[in-house]
Image: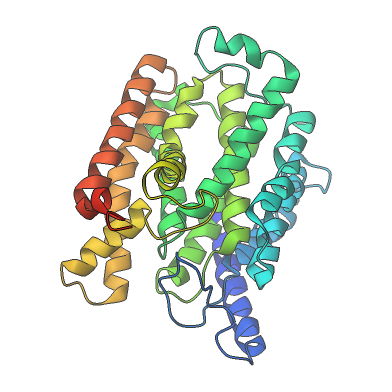
Length: 358
């Protein structure tokens, strides 16, 4: 039943992307209005940032066309993700929402998940710390911190064509492959199966156009995907009594990138930790391929995606395979963080010496 969602969402995603690209081009009468002038920008041409709109619309339409009731959990999940989507969409329209205000606008998402779907974090397998999470207010605070942080982390790693979408596809493929291998060892709820399949189709449809730089995901897409992925993983972890570290390991890449970026800006390079820059791992890898004489921009984008997919996928798969083995998950997570840092500093040796002359 659930497999049928992917082809439809795939087709709708492509059609919505093409339609939005056309409308955006028609609206761009005053030059390159869609070129975001920021430290993260790698492109030079006017490119639509509404790929996330296409994914959200294809998700809504697929849900409707497959006969889901408007009062079903599937629709309410999409509605509760709407604040994240709209916050990003406003920013994509170039209103430049202040980062602190953006955090406030994202808070309704985890709050709604907490009270209407009982999505809570009450156990991290950290001994006495878990006792504090039994207190409802602290559990809500931690959930807000985790989900809002992860939505922003998804946005940060969306800096290379196809990067975030390929990472999300890696998560879905790992879940499906290991579920088929382990059988009953990985029971998933109907809602989780629904969203993994519909997102697989919608994201792959977007990916095909994004990889060639035809359309970008935008903040709306990054926030929406971050919110729905967090919901799905935490819900699956709760329903099946899995180790919370399985979620941590599956999301190790955006988590590590976010924490390291904040610490790097705050204590090493200086500058505002809330502002974007072009010093993330994917930027460093992209720039290294540039120094290796890969002159074609698409080749550098593609090689960066391949590099990061090869690096991240074994850890994602480990997070799924060892979902009930907390000691193994923590050990592998530590290995991931160390590997991330090793790759970062080995590919960017000048990083430790930057700003010496300031």
